[in-house]
Image (cartoon, rainbow, N blue to C red; front, side):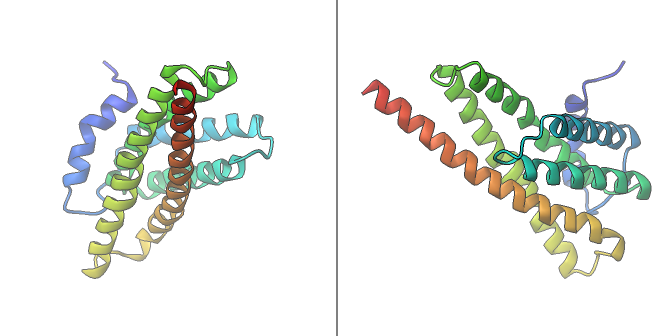
Length: 189
């Protein structure tokens, strides 16, 4: 039987985080699926690209993600990195729901605020603490012990660019959530 990709990611993420190697061999079904997801998501973004707020950053994000998945497939390594990257995608469906709620003028609904809180907490935990922090620490440790090789350079570069984007988006999410909560409190007062 096939499991949903995110369920498979949950099962395998802990092994990846416990690895004593920064980059263990890739699992083709996981990385192949994520590569396809990244490309299809990029195509959907490009089809509705309007040069609006954040569109360019989304295109950059998906191009480097597609490159990263392709590189991991070609080189058959970086499974730990892939698992953590996949785990970060748990916030994506919540962002889609938020976008649909905004389009249908449901920003004043309590579910919009709850969804925003779950996105914010998920973003801080998955994308900032785990992806940026945990991997930054892991890369630093491996660099300081001389275990990083030239083969790792593209992955480290992708991590650095993705980390900048994650922090940028987190800052925007945090400000946006504070603004929504403030407006909600003003309405109820």
